[in-house]
Image 1 (cartoon, rainbow, N blue to C red):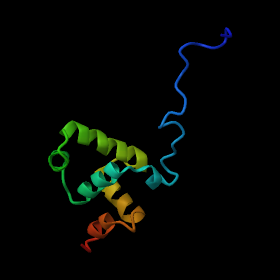
Image 2 (cartoon, one colour; image 1 turned 90 degrees about the vertical axis):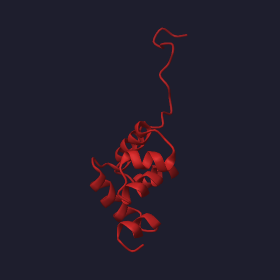
Image 3 (cartoon, rainbow, N blue to C red; image 1 turned 90 degrees about the horizontal axis):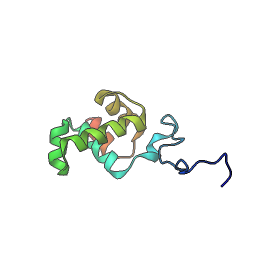
Image 4 (spheres, helix red, strand yellow; image 1 turned 180 degrees about the vertical axis):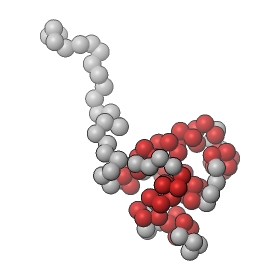
Amino acid sequence: MPADQHWPRPPTGSKRKGVNVNTDPYQHLTVRDTEILDYLAQGLDNDAIAAELRLSPRTVRNYVSRVYDKIGVDSRVQALLWAQSHLVDSHLTARVGGQS
């Protein structure tokens, strides 16, 4: 091994590496992420979402934070506004817009 290489090498291909939250973040949302957004749109808090999904509140908090990071927002209100303007073809937007 050449002297300038270190072992172990840093991981390559990190999932978060190079993700720009402002460049079409919808493509990076998982099914679980959209479920979380859907429950947020219904006005559920983390404890209620946890009960619905049979997860711990801490896990839900982590999912909510991850969704915020992916879509580039800092609050539930901002997440709802983002969903309303970006998820035009989903049932979530219809519910957020009051057309359920």
